[in-house]
Length: 316
Image (tube, rainbow, N blue to C red; front, side, top):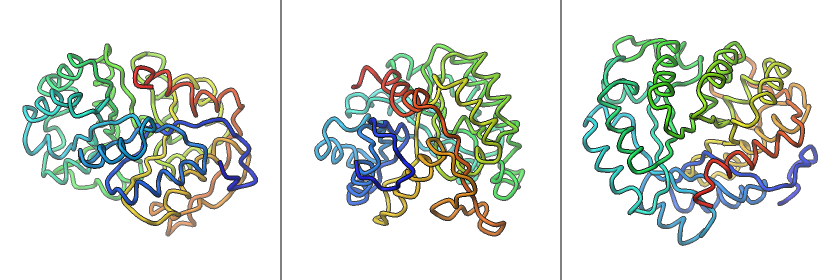
């Protein structure tokens, strides 16, 4: 690992539980940056079988492979094609499944806000198929508060964040026997939502969360670093480090900025440190600044490595 920033002194291995693979050349740059920041294992959400095969041949033993399921596809084509994809997932060399089903996917498919809810009977067939195959599942279902205020205002397709979180909790409750990684802090890194997320942790034992995306976590957890720090320490057994880096661009700074931001957030006590890349949600209101949580090393070891390696132990 290179010494890329004098403020970072954590040197043990790190597991990134949320990355995406799209382009092979971009994946090479992503892996290079990962190595510089101490990431030795990662979940790679593969947007094609070709990227999975390339990663497996080029970086053997580095990745756990998640097959990407598009949320807009399910609205357009229904559940049956998803069941066929699940049936061949392991044969194709994937280990787990991941679905991007944020509200934007409803918009892309011109679906209504209550069409094919993730917690309803029809989608239970999809979850049942994954249970039959003994698959873990990464789910992205909701988005930042800022998106609901700016992007999700058309009530033809979108509802409130509270309604979407209710749907997500319905998944946790209905599929309590399934091992789930809920992406993006279960869509609740906003400090006014941490009490609700704590209730979920106290109620449902079948899920962990990841810390992607870097800008969303940095922006929201920095608003009340003391409350965020206390929350993370209390629930440190349930968190996976994740960046949401998408291997699509050859711009090295894209990957570097996200790893640097999250490590500054978790490891240091910086105050009002500018996010090392542009946050589109705050670009016109002064930008996003990091207030570090200065987590104890014992907590970092859990979030950075122990939790994810335990969660995915059968593949390591």
